[in-house]
Amino acid sequence: MAREADSSGGRDDAPRLVLGADTLVAVDGDILGKPADAEQARNYVARLAGRTHEVIGSIAVVRDGELSSTATVTTQVHFRAASPALLDWYVETGEWQGRAGGYAIQGAGAVLVAGIEGDYLNVVGLPLARLLDLVPELLPAR
Image (tube, rainbow, N blue to C red; front, side, top):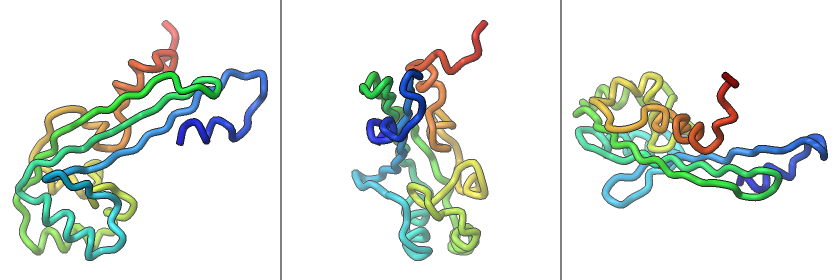
């Protein structure tokens, strides 16, 4: 993904840095991708309710057309037990759309979460601390 994006233009003489990132949710050895519809979203969050699952974020950095580094970050997410009414309410928000596992921790989906172990921003969608380890020049110069 990052390698393909690097060919998308820009000045020929400018150094190019391209980031590719993706997130997945895993429980019981199954990957819960982006739900296709509200019914699948409800099934996903019902399956996660009262349990712990993993959110795995991966990043790839391409510099000047060459893959320079990759990293994977795993965060444990503990979901609260949830009533059918709470699950229905959450799915009705529509926030699940386009979200791995069918929820967004940074939005209304926060009501489903009891806690996490690891990087919160990984669950949001980009393990920023790990990215900055790989590409420290993204930080302001001191």
